[in-house]
Image (cartoon, rainbow, N blue to C red; front, side):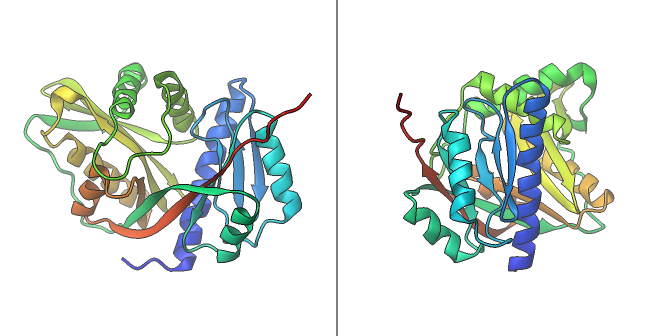
Length: 278
């Protein structure tokens, strides 16, 4: 699948919308937060140590001015938070130059993969495995399963530059659901074996996480969860599904086996918060 700058812009705008919606959900819960629109993207804060604390979607709506970057860095810095920018390699190259000139450092990369959606997709049902939409009564079980997956990260490929405590992951996952993600529960022989979610936005199916309980791995649970989300995304009118993975990870390998192609890479650039003086 070929990724043009037009498609990359579409995906990045959906990503910015997702992160902003997550930050908004955190604020509605009473946590301090903000979403600042900037150069086609968004700078978001959802509370201390949240994975939603970043600038996303830049590079397709002009180059942010020094004044805009000053304001954003001050907003993060006043909360003791570094400014983290996730920048697509198909974005305007002037932005990377502007950021490095301001002291941003490259700390990591992440890959964005996608596949077209069309009629004819089929669910995959390994023996004993069933996938259904999440119900209110199984929310906490679903949440525990997903958080456990994050607590035992993929060890293949490039390690993440950041780690989050379980309680922070749990809060962020709740906010992801509040931001519009649809939950899926997988069972194996009747027991909850895995969980996943997807968000539909402007024809894009954003795969927003999946995990399998350790006792049920290697039974096809992940394959079943992925297939169910793709089928439902196509039925909802989405024309593309996208997922973000660590480079060279098992997650990347798994989705590529299911027809996903590497579309582009995001560079992760970070500027530490300025030391506050009294």
